[in-house]
Length: 91
Image 1: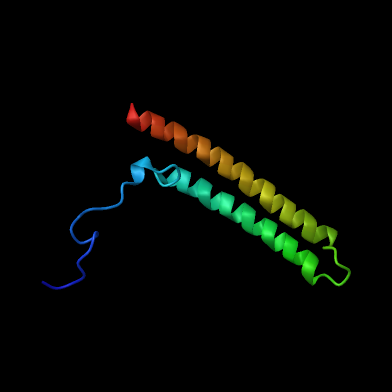
Image 2 (image 1 turned 90 degrees about the vertical axis):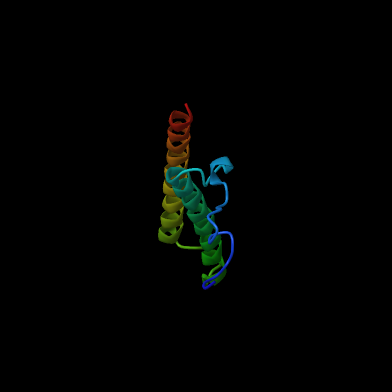
């Protein structure tokens, strides 16, 4: 027998239908949006550490703010749409 032997070789895959975020692609997109929002928050905090006077500039603050707000809005919308798609698929 050649090739790797494991869960993927014998046809069994993880049951993603029971997962909250991995049940469909739209819900996975919402998870990615939420991760981007958290990453922007962390990067925004890093701006305060590297600034010479201890505070980020207004441009840095507004860019980070809009990235967080935009990714949260996109995440919420895609989460709701993914839930509706999931409901429609199940019955």
